[in-house]
Image (cartoon, rainbow, N blue to C red; front, top):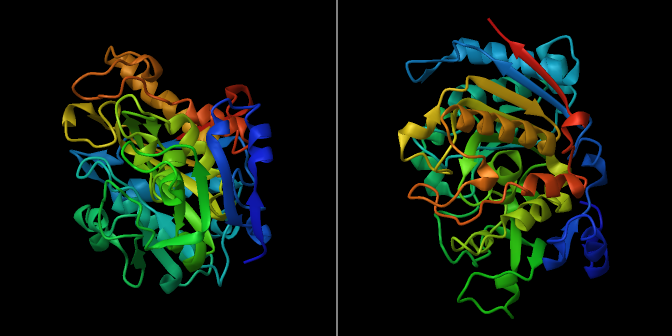
Length: 375
């Protein structure tokens, strides 16, 4: 695992020069993983985003396996510059790896990580020599995982994992989490003791720290009431640690702008997250992260691929903005609270702050976006 590494107050105050919200941070404690750092965030393809669209990827509300298979093949080979499917996956994975897939069940039944994409990821890992028993599909809450039906989507032999059984508003129990990996912030949920270390900390799931050595982040293209967008970065920050409610506990206590990039900066998250795939076949442009009101669901029919989650989220955010513009809605950062999105001010700036912290490329002029239409 390497040596323990504690990043103290001085380093974060220096980081705060790039992002004024960061002095909220008291410190990070986590293990270094030098062997994984070459492939970790922002990865070997910083600033590169591949967008693959297929008109037939969803028909009458039903995902279509063959079109999605073609999209996955084009996306992975274009991202890596490889000649074929197997070579593309071998750019990241090898025999002996234990690989986690972080899915997103929030938004069931309309907008979640799709079964067809999961199947293709498993096929790609197998082609790289990863054993089926060494593939683990994960979400933080077991009950959400099951209610979304992910257990029924998994190919035979693929394992499933979670940090805890069900959603808990308090979220201070660290069962299922690793006491050696946490971020501490001067931020607590109202009513909790601000002197309590557990109230000020978010601990990383043991699934990530102990059970796997590489992670694939399978996010979904969605609007979010407090974070503005919930794409690759937020799928990591709010899916891999506990005590996340404090980041957006009331419509006016919203600290997602600082919380998300700081959590993703944790060494164990940054170094083990190897590949980001954004499922935008069916997406959500308002009222997120859930999709109780189907009027805000749209068929975007696009998958996105990147090792750089900041560049990926920049492009995904833009796709949501374009859809909102089409239907006459205001930009996310300017949106006012209503009966669908109750937060006074959304914070999509977490994407730009993540770029300022070195997690990837924010500036569109430095993003290499390649679009493909697959027939």
